[in-house]
Image 1 (spheres, one colour):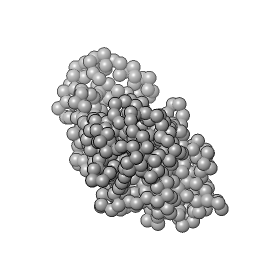
Image 2 (image 1 turned 30 degrees about the horizontal axis):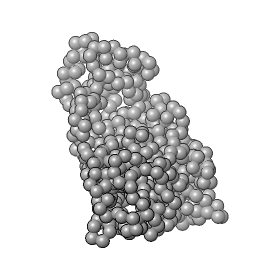
Image 3 (image 1 turned 180 degrees about the vertical axis):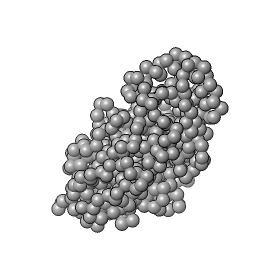
Image 4 (image 1 turned 60 degrees about the vertical axis):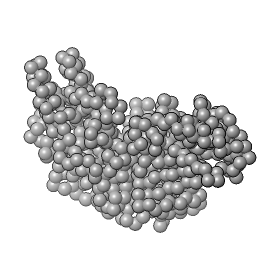
Amino acid sequence: MIHKNIRSAARTRVLLSTAAVLAVVTSGGIWETAQAAPPAPTTAAAALNTPTWTTQTVAPGVQVRSATIDNAAAEPFWTVTVQAPTTGRLSGAATWAAVGPQPWADTTAQQLRAGGFEPRVETVRWPGYADTPRGVMGVRVRIGSYATQADAQAAARAVTAAGFHTSVDWTGYDAEQPADRENVHVAVIDPHAFTGTVEGTHDGNVAQRVTTSSVAAKLGSLVGVNAGFFVTSNADGVQGTQSGLSADRGRLESMAAGSRAALIIGDGGRHVRVADLTTTVTVHTGAARYQAQGINRVPGLIRDCGRPGGTPSELPWQDVTCHATDDLVLFTGEFGAPLPTGPGTQVVLDGAGRVVSAGSRGGTVPADATVIQGIGSAADWLTAHARTGQRLGVSEVIRDTEGRRVRLDGDDSIVSAAPTLVRDGRTSIDAAAEGVVDPSDLSFGYAWANTRQPRTMAGVDSRGRLILATVDGRQSGGSEGFTLQEAAAFMRSLGAVDALNLDGGGSTAMAVNGALVNKPSDATGERAVGGTIQVLPGQTD
């Protein structure tokens, strides 16, 4: 067992953790010249080794920098966490949480001592999210500090045998402790100097999963990163399809999961901005109209929720699949998988919007056509109003939270995820509104948002430059990742005035000149994802 004065060092480690992120790079200055160096660490981060940045100018206006930031003051270790019993607010099912209320912690600690264990009770505070409570989130109960995971697992078995629910954790993932190492990669694309284009892409098929680096190699991309959230299990829909808003080359390919953060890549990357976006799609003929709630997804299955009519919630909920009994879904030509089958009705529209066939669900999307499927009352509406030879109109509206309409042209694309990290130069993480945490249910989203994870982030600085960044994570003794709060601090340190969190975890990947440059966290290597952002060379690059 490794003996450490854990409690007395807590406040110092919190300061070191925050300062370490802010000291990684100067606020925008690192990008002013190719030889610019990060500033010296602040007093609170004095234990940080000044990172050595490697710099690569991939093309005029496209620069990639990479570094490993080490913190000699960090002393992470393996420990046993005793889980708190709770009830999932959405599911109503019994579950477990890493953090619980004080009375539970006091009782549990007393029971553990009676059983011969030596627990410690650690206070966990809410991060500075824009829409969650301030102060104490709860407490967690832990036992021991161990040099190896195997030692911690052996201790956990004894605690479990005594009647407690446990997990084995690496304290380097805790927000309250400083990370000992972070591997970061940052690309900045200056539209004033870069002659190529930037686009969000599914590489021609929204219903496939491919690795970021393979798409980058195929397209001859200068830089590529993974993009938005996507379906990973057949139980939740068609794998690879997006679970949030996306648009390729001016065409909407999936709808928003509520009002969530999105990166709008306008004019092939000449104009980029971050905004929370919503989508409305209406199918109409004459005075009759019906609201579609999905594009390129299985009717009745709404990954990440956030659509009217969904249960158990119409609000966005990360990694939750909601259900709908009345659902109208459109399929575009980029849906390259077999169409969903089952009860309901399907119509096929030609390029002019005229119904060329109507009947049961299934088959594939014909060339230059749109397919509409309906179940429940949506199927009844299609049967009544979509007869062969009749014209159906489809209207699509994308709006930001200020009500402004986002209009798409052929060189525009959108990728989305959650949550917003930076707004108008300030940290502004709307974690609850975007459905990645739930203040009323600490079993939901705690590890996803409040502990360190691999992250992919995107933002824009005051000069209109696009920033794409990754941090490796889930590597005990290696790179540990960022919390959402640290991700926001990192993006601000890079000069971002607006930024969002993209898909992360095992999806996090960055490719430069078609080759993977980061270390993904999945044991099997780089994960196949549902969409990417690619920086494509111009003719002179």
